[in-house]
Length: 364
Image (tube, rainbow, N blue to C red):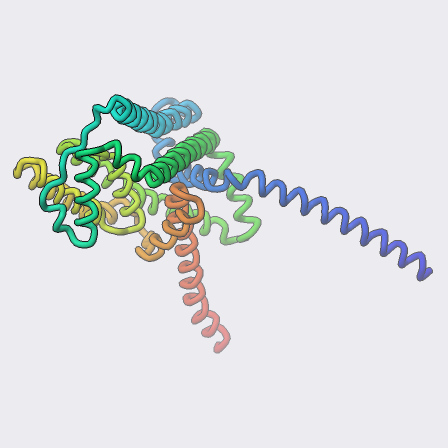
């Protein structure tokens, strides 16, 4: 009997190991397949949760046609992402093409450096020498710095490829958000089942708190950052600041990580005084200060009641997300860490409230 039992045990053990190995292999390969879509998927879920009330109101005005409204929302947002990106790439290609043609035709000229450049600290002398050489003999300058120029060119091409990837990921995120918004009731039901499976009776409280946090952070942090970036680019376009879209992107990043946009707009405003008239330059400086400080009254309005994530939490989440997954991680990280912070603090407060009650009951 012992030998029969041992054989049965060995057979069951082998079968169990095989099943675990097959299941583990499937899990590993599944995770590897979906890994590139984790961040876009999370961002899509966050977008869907944040804009669902707005989509619900609009769909009711259109007779409950939620799918149509969700599709229109996705198309509008994707168009707002793709059209400026195509215009930026097209203008960059045209600019590079014109510079290349000018170099080949020997019609490109570099103006001589201002006299004050030589007096700049550290880099003044070398910069003045190189600038002067480029203004008198551009061909010799290009040959002299050919390795450095090639390195910069390859780096810029790499950044361009990374930018295209980011745009593609944003499009995927918006498409996921549109699909979730079109079937919001089913999605909410599935999410409630998942949360209930892990949290039990507290599922409803956790879901409502997480939803409020997503909407609060999206409106109070990311929404305000987009408003500041939009206002900044409008002001820069009016006064004629080149590469306004690039500077607006930096303003957006600073605003999300809770740093004042004046760190970018201040030097730009100072530079505007060098080429613009005094009145528009002063107006742009005032505009830059207003844009940088408008978050102080916009955040209390848009953040939402009960959602109070500290600046350090948003900063850690945004920077950590950006280091993990690039630009999309900047947005997703800020929201996810804010959700975890809010849920953790809610749990601590609940423990503090329940502990005195438990002590009182035990004493009685």
